[in-house]
Length: 315
Image 1 (cartoon, rainbow, N blue to C red):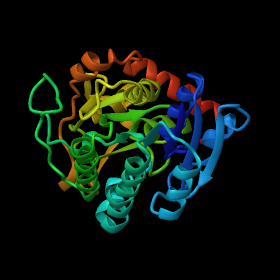
Image 2: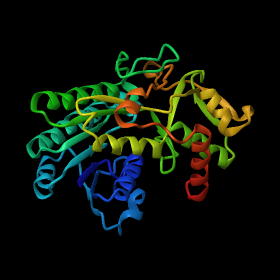
Image 3: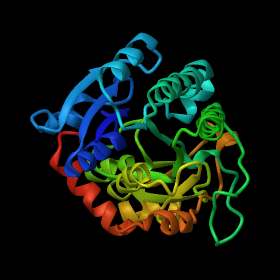
C-alpha cells in the first residue's frame, strides 16, 4: 500500500516506518522536525519502499493538497502533533493549532481522497484509574491539560468523519511509550531520562511525591499496535487502547533503573494540576479486535533502552 506517515521522523513514527517498510509498503514520511529528527529515519533513506521524507507542516494546506493529489495513499497514519504537556500549558495556541486544526486539514484530504485514518491520541485524555481492572475505552475522560483537550477535540472530529461520511477511521490511545530513539533530555520520556542519568553517573529527580503510576509500553509493541490498527477493518469507528497492562510508580521505576535510592531526589512538580495519579491500561479491546498484546516486559524494555543509549552519543 501507499502510506502517508505524519510525524514520521518522531520517536514512535520512526518505529512505525520501520514496521511498514518491513511489511512491504511504500512510505512517505512527513515531519516539520519541531520534535522529530532526521537522523531517526536515516537508515531508511536507501530502502526501496521509503519514497520520500517531506519536511513540512500539516498546517500547510497547499502542501497537504499537493501530497494527496500526487500520491494515491491508502492509509494515513497521523502521528504528527505537539506532545509536551508543559508546552501546552505555557503556549496552548501552538498545541491546539497542531493537534486539532492540523488534524482537521488531514481529515479533509483523507475525506476527499477516501484514505483510511489511524489517529494517534494519548492516554493523557483519561481521568485517573481507580481500580486494578485498568482503564478501558469507556473510562471517563478528563482534559487536565490543553494537550489533552486538543487531542479530545481531534478524536471527536476523526470519529465524526466515520459516522458522517463512512470514512474508515480509528482513534488509538497508546499508554506511556518508551524505548530506543526517544529523546533523553527535557522533552524525553521518564525512562529515557532516568536511564541516561544512570549511565552518566548523575542523580535523578522526580516531580512531586513520585507515587504517581505509569503503564509503560515498549516502543516496538506500540508500533506493531499502530500499524495493525491500519490493516484491520474491525477497529474502524472505534477508540482502542494499548499498554503493558501493568503500572509502576515513578519511585519504583527510578529504583528499578538506578538501583540506588541515595541517587533519587524529589523536586517540586512543574504542573501538578495536570498530573494523572494512576495510569493502568486495560488492552482487552485491542486483543479482541486486533489479536494484539504486548510482548516486551518492562525489565526487558529498560534493558534494551539502556543498551541503545549506551551505544549512542547521547550521554
